Amino acid sequence: MSELRPRGGRRAPEPTIARHGRLRPPGPVATILKFLAAGLAVVLVSGAAVVGYAVWDIASSVKPGVALIGETEGPAPDIGAIEGGVNMLLVGSDSGEGDPAYGRRGEHLNDVTILLHISADHTNATVVSFPRDLFVRIPSCPKVDGSGNWGSQSSAKINVALSYGGLACVVETVKEVTGLDIPFAAKIEFNGVIEMSNAIGGVTVCVASAIHDGQIGLDLAAGPQTLKGWNALMFLRSRYGVNGGTDLARISNQQVFMSALVRQVKARETLTDPIKVYGLAKAAVDNMEVSNSLRNPLTLASIALALKDIPAENIQLIQYPSRFGNSNGQGGVLPIQDAADKLFAAIAADLPVQITGSTGPGASLDPNATTPPADPSATGAPSDPATPPLANVVPLPSTITGQSSAQQTCSEGQTYRP
Image (tube, rainbow, N blue to C red; front, top):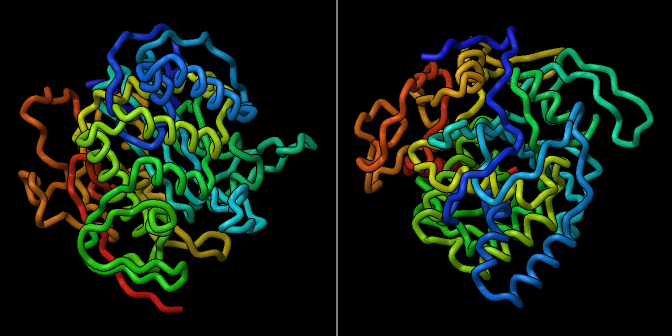
């Protein structure tokens, strides 16, 4: 087994910049980011006229990129899976910027911060969600308007990093927290989630107990619910309508959605439908801000191809280990540092991980699942017999919650009336 190193001694991760691609046939991929990345490749099979229009329309929609701190531009990848491992940060902003239906809040907060790690051999992936109220150190970041630098903050909630120095500052903050290099990043606004859920035709989730969130106006009955558009967005945003009413519960509820999305895309062959693929790609580029390293469509496609063949049971959805506490007189959540060190040491060493903790307070195992866990005390679904077992798997401390994408879970709702 490879040597694990704690966060204090930063270790260089596996290569993450695109190099020479490995040719692989196109196929369904596992997450929203993959839709964008695979779009052009699938559209190419649907006729020259469509290809010409789609390429022109999507390429012309790409916004100027964001320069990450210390970023160097690597060689353009070939058409094929990216070589080596990948670390990518996905940021969700609730500013309402560009979304007239929601309205601008005057705040720019990264209320969703997710790190995606793809292993160098493309056999597994780890997705880590950071609580918005997590107290972290925010390093000095250049101001977005170029007028100087913000001073570092010894302890602040992670979701203010976007307001300090934009996407690049969020990347620097997560690099500081994890000890990992992160060469790829993207930010998506609320309307992007709406448009992309519409393009796929909705995501069907299991709701164990009804969700009534009076704060945002979401009401979902118990049972299977197909979410698209506004309801999909509100489901992902809901905090007080989820068991316990905390941000930690909201993350486990979001993982119910993400795991259902992975299984749905793989089962329905969504990306064989050129119309859906074009809609997904268009919705993404219209509503995302990306780092310069992601502006090349071939880079996006190569990352998608690295993900497409990873079995759902080898995609782990993890919540950053934390506990409720106070800092500088503010309430929020504090890191469980020993558990976090073990998690990111495994990622830095490019080793697969196993979740031994619970699904989190906002989710529960689906009692009607067609493939229940072989071990009721574990949260990971059993492996497909056709899937080779992973080597050197690192069991994570039980204080780390989450689930595999193969695991069928349900949202634990509650009623909240302000």
